Image (cartoon, rainbow, N blue to C red):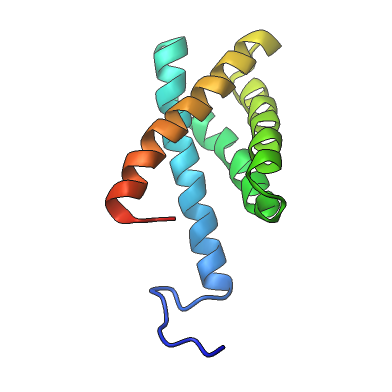
Length: 117
């Protein structure tokens, strides 16, 4: 099938890189919001440091479907949060779940406005 129109990035490697960087920024913002809500005032660098892990995992596992992708991404997010914020495992679990909730709560309206997916 021939492609009748070309997207903004034109596809290929640039599209993958831009998509990954957008996911990292999105995860960093939502993780910082969740951490500020749960832990109080924290440096933004912690969220930026941890955001690449769930972005990479969700990016790689998209072909496995939403159930596997969400479960493995939550586990990877938990490990990244625990390492980045230097938290106990119980606190890191709560923060990872809050991060998931904040991500869903921010993604749904953005998707409705911009039609991302």
